[in-house]
Image (tube, rainbow, N blue to C red; front, side):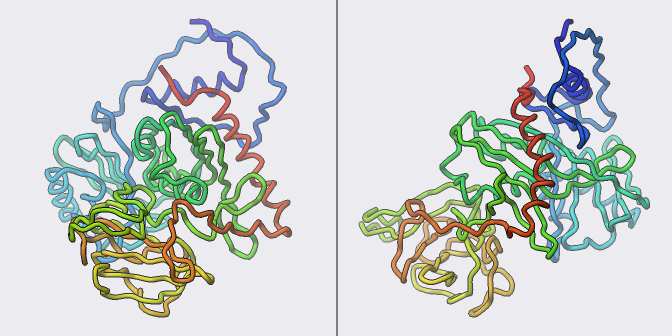
Length: 427
């Protein structure tokens, strides 16, 4: 085979040859100081031999799943959240009880698992502390669990993909952890409504932290940078933490992507009923106005505050069922109805941060099924949040622009490389 590749692309191509051929995505890394300009061209001939599958590979398309341990989390519920089937959950719990390595689960810590499409657990890695790793490997139908002291190494990972159906479907195909996909959706939530703006062929690229030990992935860190091309419009997000400890995502010009209001209180759910002057009420069976937006989602799905706020009301209220009303900067307020329950600490007068979970989807009050009824109010009057132009946020402090630019430029160069090398798809 003859390949006309410059040295940089040759290194990228050879790196790709060592990865499983997923058919839809590539991931690769380059040295931070690599220059992508003025690169000479040459023709090379390489014989490429693909490595054999890992012993712990199921032989099918596996997914990396990562979950944060919640307060009061049990090992069984954690394994279920990771998508592991009943048989393997029972086998893993039996092995954990035998070795007593895992012990109590620590809230906030991440657990990384490689799971086959039919729910078989292939690998599990749990950083019980910053220097202690618990690993579980599959041996036929049982699991071997070990504990060791480590010093993890951080490596930036670059991945890209395109939308063929849902966002999570595309990021799964790109082997991007769900946590990174959620951070990307949150970063762009002020510009892109992931309920209604996605189109087939939209393209995304991400750069995120991955921590390794002995060449093995043990956990993912934060999203460092991302690009999302939605309906041919490109959006960028660069992570930056200033010297005062304030952190967030900014576009290439240093403008904060944190809008005064998120476009939606839930990033990935279906709009089941829009804002309208007349519809047939599903419970009352009468025609009347619907002065909000309904998001269909399973009971227990977390609901986020769309902006910094103070709780004005929390409790039961007529057809709303369990309701939360938040007061934002005057004249704005928002309401969240039909909740199954309220998040811990949600009480009248409590201060709430944008994106904070305030409650969980339910079907209380006049609801025919589980969904969130969401209202956006201006001076107390309901307005259509999908049709309003919402206030924007403030730019980066001018004192830190030079520091931001120094951090953003190499990340932006990598995003350009991901976009322009056309290696996001392998046929």
